[in-house]
Length: 259
Image 1: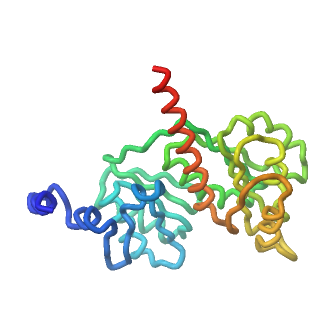
Image 2: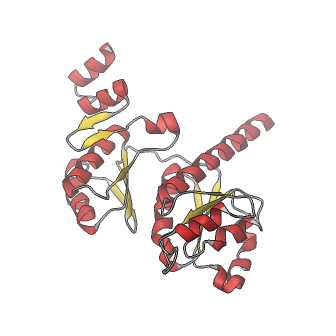
Image 3: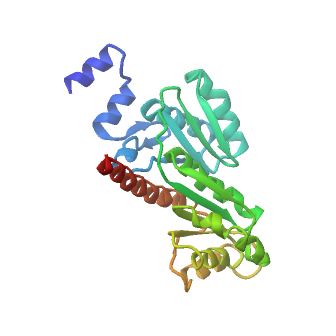
């Protein structure tokens, strides 16, 4: 406790950083940011921008950068993104921005991105599924995994899927995003021996076109796989990251034992 107080007094630690160390979270005008989630859960807290004002998004991003040296944001509007581009460089002049459609990863110069010896395959059935897959990719890249992206191989032309089977089998874990009837994850899960996470997307039209048909198809899959909620790209990326981290730990332990 005394060390924290001394650090705040001499300016080497901000009040927000001290609060994060003491409580695990920081309270600001825009809400509470869970700064300790990475250490507790292995996955950082993502800032869901949907439903927040640009000012609230900026405030939470600044808190994340101050306490964890990075901010992971999802479901951003253009107004929110522009507000971040304008405000963040004033508080973190050398911050880097990596954007995937409506998802964004901001890092300070002090942030050291981890590196995992594991590959996450990220597959989409069609172009319309890519924004949801982008959200999953942002999580995986932040975790330090290698991401092998394969887009637009839906089952309407099954040859597109079969052409990629050897590549898919090389991944340590697969995220497969699909809308409509959600058949692609089921097909792929029957062709590979790696864990498959089905990511249903609210694409398509007519009965079940809001993602319900895709989710139902994945839950009823005859092949062994798991499924997350509709459009839950962050959750799919987080699940794949936890698997990739376990694989990396096993490989690292195996290498050390051989030495």
